[in-house]
Image (cartoon, rainbow, N blue to C red; front, side, top):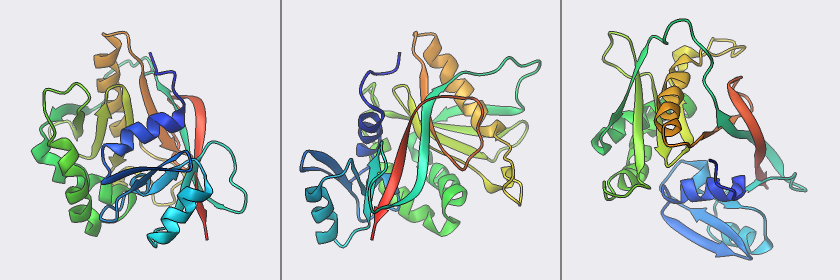
Length: 232
């Protein structure tokens, strides 16, 4: 089952483990990680004037995750949040998914950088994310690093971090997006999500995922939306 807490709270709980500083200002939680390029690790979760003042004081982008429109702010994009349920398939997807150890975090970060930024961000992401993956392997709340490989190939093309029953950080290499961005080949992501879903489903849990609104992904049963807003 999905936790009854709000989508905003679950996003914060997930990304707080990937962040350097966790604060509260004016009743709103703030993540501040000046060495990380992750937007979710450098934003307030909900708006308050105190949280805004903190970001201004740090010369940080004034970023806010909010479940309703934020007056005077620019909407950068919206996360569609919901549960994943795999379709019935005649034949399996042509990808192999495996859970790997934290020492492959650079592989994860290379995929994330190429998917959402560019490859030059790989080292920054690796330094930001690896400490979270090195935490006690006995903790059931640790992240699980999942990689997807095309059949009979050795180089992964998609990656994701699973925490409990949530995946909010994932990436698929750009060659799986058509040049005009009119459609995506989401099969590598689907393979990872199916792997996580079946593991969770055996324990009676659903898999919660988030997908940016500009990424076409019909297998999401949407339950909420959270926008990322920027104040100038």
